[in-house]
Picture 1 (cartoon, one colour):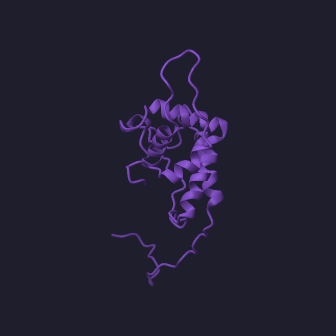
Picture 2: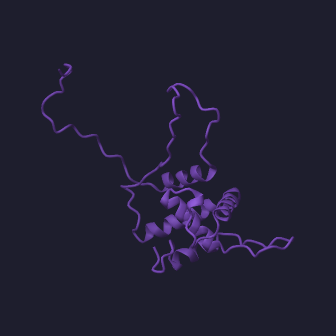
Length: 163
């Protein structure tokens, strides 16, 4: 984390900035486009915190702007290239611990009163950026799974019911 409270250092941003297309002003007029760095950091804040887009703090661009920029970058293949560049920058500085990572933070809310075998009406699908981010993680991961260890307890578990 940079000293000014941003999520990226200037060196990290220089590595990523060249990969992102400059947002162009609409031919219809309107407001000038929001800076790429502000949007990128807003996206990182949401990914890092796990919060909803609408919970993005006021110091960042609007949640809709950040979400649209992420969607556009993902469709253009820009997000994956920027994500790889950021991971390489962090890894070069030794700031990634490949032995301790989280590959999936998704959850499914329980339906009130629904039986376990009932399927929801609409199947939820992971968004494309999630799958590409997971693929980058897996391609960069060099750790090996630990071998299973035996229980420290020397007594075998009883199969007899407790009274």
